[in-house]
Image 1 (tube, rainbow, N blue to C red):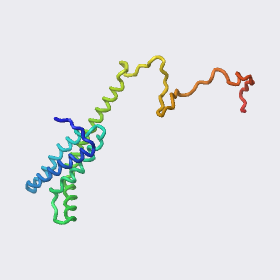
Image 2: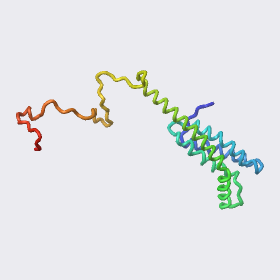
Image 3: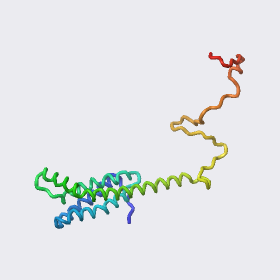
Length: 181
């Protein structure tokens, strides 16, 4: 099976075109079987959309499939004629076949969630490459606990230690203790 990596827009277009084709084919069937065939064929489209969306756009998988369902069901929706009749037929068909819509969205959602969890686990393993058997990273000698600050601000090492001697001692001024200047 090929492993294409579709963007969110590409996954939406793929699922929409597939559901329009499925809707056209279901329109050729008898009236009682149209919605069932459309719903059954919606599930593999959802699975493929969840599998083929690229990792950066995983959140788009469960979002685009209900839109594709709504667009693809137009040929199957029963209408009494005119724009208003078509909209009422679409809303009625969506309401009566909500189980297929929710099921397909759930299929896509579960697939992208599993993929995301696996990606996060792989990233965690990759980031732990230099660790010890306990899972903690080795501390290199001579390296402090400082954090590199983006933007070239240098190294921030946390709270500073008090100096060994008061700077006024170097200038010869008397040291005052407990008084506020």
